Structure formats: C-alpha cells, structure tokens
Image (cartoon, rainbow, N blue to C red; front, side, top):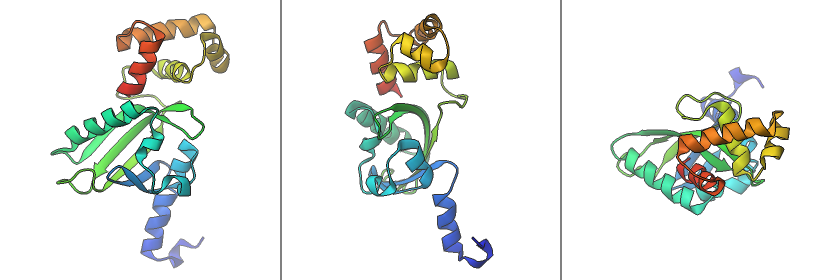
Length: 188
C-alpha cells in the first residue's frame, strides 16, 4: 500500500485496525468497533463482536458485574483505568490480560470509551502480585487442568506445579482449588 496516496482519515483507520495491541471502542459496555488484534486475542471475528455486550469476553456474569462496578467507581473523576484480569476467548479458554480504558465522556464514563487489551500469557507483569510462572499455572487451573496436565503443558513436573499453585493460593488468601478459581475469576 502506498501510504503517501491515502487520505488522513484512511490512515487513521488503518492505524487503528492494524495496531499491535487490541483496541476496542465501547458505548455503554456495548462493543462498537474492534481491531484485528482483538480478533486474534479473543478468537471472535469483528462481525461477531461488534454490537455485542462486552459480557461476551468475561468468564462469568459476576466478574462482568464486579468489573463494571470497579470501573464506574474509578472513572468518576478520573479519565483512565487499568488492571489485569482473566477474560474468556471464543474457545472458552480463560486468558490473563491487561485492560486499559479511557472514557471520552467524563460526565457519563460508560457512554463512550476506548479500551486496549494485551494478552499477558508470556509477558512479565508490572502490577500483579503473581509472577509470570504463577500466572501461567493459574491460567491452567482456571481452565480445569490437573497438576499433571499443567506440568505436561508447561514442561515442568507436577510437583513444581503444586509449589506454584500453593504460592498462588497463599498470595490470594484461599484454602482450596474451588476458592482459588472463584477468587481468580472475580478478582481479575
């Protein structure tokens, strides 16, 4: 493509669509526009996502509601919000992402927002209390893998998985796997 021959508006749209991070425009938590990277991260096509509630990308309704409440509280008086959380792909796989949002309508924060999504599977975290390896183990736990299956997938022993799992449980203050999964989904 000859970028010298296209209009500024076409260049802006190309930049949005081909950005190396997931970009999404929401209106009242309804997806208005997504770029190619969002399609790659979550496995849904643009046509399948646009017009849908953002709920489609959450592992549970509780997570969707709690995250929305957290956003609303934070965005009252501040234009930006960032956190790390689990989100769900079309395949049902739950992944760890960094989400950053900015409201374009500060008096009504959800009316129009721009969000970025970055899949953190192998990237180091700057704000999470979990190490990258612990996050990887946590992702497998959330997706229903046993310690043996997790070890095989990660190329480590089941005992090493248990050590990481124990560390995750301690850091999150939970007593068993069910509490761990619930806490990771709701907290994220």
